[in-house]
Amino acid sequence: MSFCVAIDGPAGAGKSTIARKLAEKMGMIYVDTGAMYRAMALFMLEEGIGQEDTEAMSSRCKEADITIRYENGEQTVYLNNRNVNSLIRTEEVSNMASISSPQPNVRKKLVSLQKELARNADVVMDGRDIGTCVLPDADVKIYLTASSAVRAKRRYDEFVEKGIACDFDKIEQDIIERDNRDMTREESPLRQAEDAVLVDSSDMSVEEVMETIMKICREKKRGI
Ligand code: DC
Image 1 (cartoon, rainbow, N blue to C red):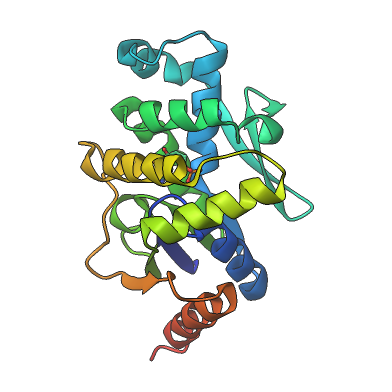
Image 2 (image 1 turned 90 degrees about the vertical axis):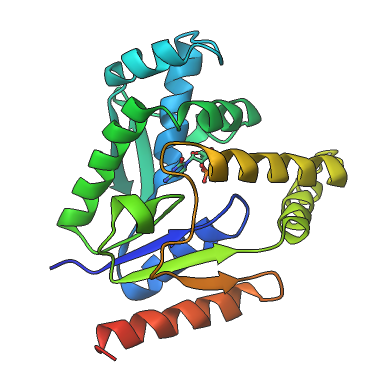
C-alpha cells in the first residue's frame, strides 16, 4: 500500500515549495498536478485554440499526450514526447490553464493519470482537488492557505528579486480573481476536504509550515 499526502490550496500559498521539501525529507515522489494542467494549456495555445473555444478544448484535449518523468529527482512534464518544463511558467500559460482546467474532459484525462501515479508510488501531490477528488483516501490531507495580501507580497518579492517591474495592487487583484475562479467553478472547485487539516501560513515561516506538516505525517505513519 502506498502512502499518499494531498496538499491543496489557492495559488501562491506555498504548496509546491512545501510539497517538494516534504517529498525529499520523507523519500516520496512529488507530483505537481498544476504542471500537468499547464502542459495541457500550452497544447491549446500552440494549436491556436482561443480562450472562448471551450468546445475545441474539450474535444481536442485527447490529442495531448501528457506524461511525467523523473529526471535527477525532478518532475519533468512531456507534451507529446517533448520536454515542456521551461515553457509552462509564463503568464500566458497561467491564464490559459485557469480557463482550460475546468473543462470536464481535460480533468477526466489528467485526474486518471494522477490516480495512476499514486497507485504505483508514495506521493506528495499538490493541486486544487487532490484531497476532494483525486486521492479521497489520502493518508494525510492538508489545506494550505495564506491571506491574499501575504500571497501577493510573496509573488511581488519574487518579481523584484528577478528585476521585473510590477505593481503590488495588480498582483493582489489577480490573485483574488484567480481564487474566485478556482473556488466557484462547477467542475471540482477548490475547497477544503472535510478531513483535511487547515494550515494558514500567513504568519509562518517555511520551516514552521514544514515542521507542522511533518509532525502530522509522522503521527499518521505511527498510527497515532
Ligand atoms: O498550481 P498552478 O498555478 O500551477 O496551477 C495551474 C492551473 O491549473 C490553475 O489555474 C489551477 C489549475 N489546477 C487545477 O484545476 N487542479 C489541480 N489539481 C491543479 C491545478
